[in-house]
Image (cartoon, rainbow, N blue to C red; front, side, top):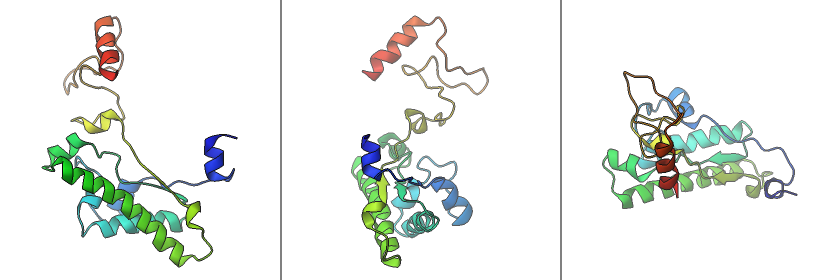
Length: 175
């Protein structure tokens, strides 16, 4: 039996999805085109209630795995909007606590739901979700992680082609 089967007891498990879109489109919290995206809700005490509501919407729709609102939570994204490292750590921790609170509220509403059936999973974005402009979907990373910096005027490529030096620099940077 795999570890995943052991965690979910061989049951199908539905995860939430589209947290940022739910905050924007359903709960009217405008976060698009901001460095922190859905993490911004955890950073604002008043808006954290919207994050709690979003998690509850997913649970009420049948999700039993909640992803934390931390996909773009990296120290450099927090720095871009003026947070210290200590503040960033607090917000990341709060994002996990809000998901846990949603689980508690949902279980109180649904006495037949075992809290252990609801998993909280840390959402970690790719390196590309932390660079400017964001490149998590295109995979065009600046050196030393990619062949060149992003260009708004030239073709961008995710392939090194014959650039063996660039390949080596990228490999070394990841070690």
